[in-house]
Image 1 (cartoon, rainbow, N blue to C red):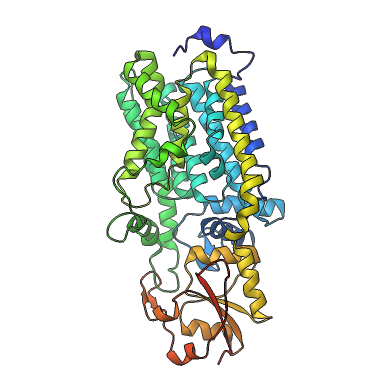
Image 2: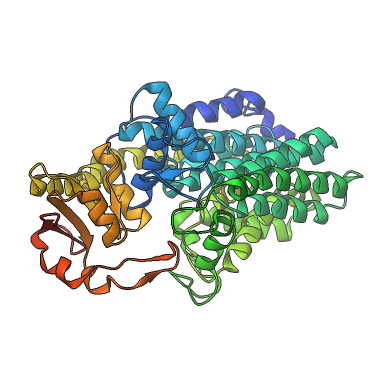
Length: 492
C-alpha cells in the first residue's frame, strides 16, 4: 500500500493534484449532478414538500421562518429551502429541475470539500480520487440529485470538517471560527446534528493525534462556541416568532419535536442497535476498499495511521452517534459517505489510482444513465401531479380542499399544481374555506372514522359532525394507491 512521494510523482501527468484536483472534481461533479434533473418526477413525500417550501419563499410567502401552504413550518430551518427558492428567483422558473438543481449544487460543494480533505489528509492526487469515489457511489450521487435537506446538511458538515482540519494543521483561530460557523450553518440546513458531527469527528481525531499543535483544545472550543452562536440564532428566531395557529411552541417544535421522533416510545421506523448494515450496500462499491483501510490502519505504521485516522473516526463516530437513536437508523447515512470514500481512497496504492478513478467515473456515469433511462420513465407512479390532476378532473371547476393532511402529504400535491391549496383541519376550517359553495374534499383513507382524534401538534380537534359526513359523496379513489379518496360536498 505504498503512498510514497515517488509513487505520487509518477502520477503528475494523469491525476490532478492540489487545487487543480479539487477544481477538476468539482467540474466532474457538475457534469454528473446537474444534467437531466427534470427527467424524473419529484419523489413523494419529502421532495415535493421541500420543493413547495422553497417555492413559497420564491413567491414571497416567507422571509426567515419557512412556510408550507401558508402555515409556519418549524420542523426544519430555512437555509436549504431559501437557497432553492433563490435559485427559482434567479432562473425565473419553478420547474422540478430547478428544485433539484439547488440540491445538486450543494452536492458539488460536498464533493469539492471531500476532494480538498483528501489532498490535505492523504496526499497529492488522492483528493481528486476521493471526489470521484464519492460520485461513483450510486447512493450518494442519486441523493445529491434529490431535493431534500440531507444534501445541505452533508455539504455544510463536510465544509465544516475541512475548515476545522485546516485550522488544526495551520494553528489558525480564524479557520476555527470559520469551521464553527459552517457547523452552525449545517444546523440551519437541517437539524441539531449539524453542530455535533463536525466537532465529534475533528475532536476525537485531534485527541488521538500525539503530534497535534499546541492550543488545539482552545481552537476547537472556540469553534464549538461559534457554531453554537450561529445555531442559536435560529432558535432565537423561533423564540421571537409567533406560534402557529394551534398554539404550538416554535422553538420546542424544532428542538424537541424531531428528537421525540427519534427517541422514546413515539420513535418511528425503529430498528435494532447498530442497524447500519445498510452502509455496506449504500457505500458500494467502495465499502470493501474502506474495510481494507481498517486493516491498514491497524497493521500500518505511523504514516498510514496519520493519513487514515480522521476518515476512520468520521465513519465510526457518526455511525455510533446515529445508532444512539432507536429510529430511522438506516436513513441518514449521506453525511457518513464522504468519510467512507476518504477511507477507501487512502487505501488505494498509487499505481492503481488511475484505474480506480476511471472505475469511479464509469460507476457515476452508469448511475446517471440508469436514473435517466430506467428510473425516470417509472417515476409517474410516485408523483403527486397525476394524482392532483385526477382531483381537478373530479372537481369539475369546484375548489379543491385537503382535509387533515400531514405536512409531507400536502406538499406532494401543492408543488405540481403551482398553487396554494386550502387545508382544513376541522369542520370550522372546512366551512370557512367552502363559504357555502360546492367543494371537492380530498382525504386520507380512514379520515372520517378518525375525525374526532385530537392532534397534539396543532393543539386542536379535527372534529366533523355526523350530519356533515352524511352529505359527503364519494367521487373516486386514486387508482394507483389505496391512500387517497375524494368527496363532493355542496357546502351547506
